Image (tube, rainbow, N blue to C red; front, side, top):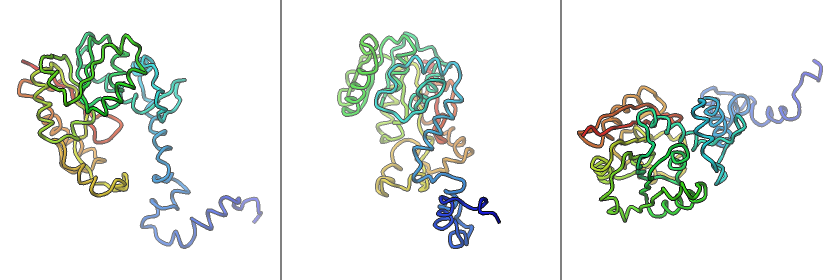
Length: 300
């Protein structure tokens, strides 16, 4: 055989080290071994950034013209050096793809222009940034832990102009009594009620029941114990702590759509703020398999 058909230096080394009689003697686990990581699949343990960018790229390819308009309205998204891709000439990151999708879901059920909005647990403020950049909001109140509130205040003061930033009110949970005399058109919670103790969640739902007209929630439908997802890198004690908070503590296979959809009915029932509320709409919240979203309206 002519030498020109033989392996180059790279593949000669791969054959010597990773794909040989010893490593391929058994087929039992080869698809999650270095064998397959060299010939078909990027190693999930060392290629997290590659997979994240691939996810963002594919999500960007599916954005509608409405999504793109909303995204372009949100200026200064690059503050903080997010992991991002370029698509249609725009920098796109996962946080703001999720934010414009959340906004689309909310807007399909209610027009938020002129609304007074309360967000419980805003993180660094991506949802506030997105909503204020796309709608004429009267006021946007953020209720959060003091340290996280410091972050969102600094971030939003950087990315918003003075006029929009003046609409934001920051309230630490220790000062929650400030809200007693307030009424809101919409309350928003994304990815934090599931991490709170049951008594705390119920207290927030009671607040929403008494002081809000609409409620948008986006959280997991349950817990999981799949070690292949993160190797339980934070330790077994941290895993145990993560399993107990929230209203929905069933451990499920979060990559079984049947299990997720079945538990979504529990999600809709659990996050209903009170007897006088109706679920306007609910759906899977892409891209994470086990996240669900719902919009409720007070009928009283």
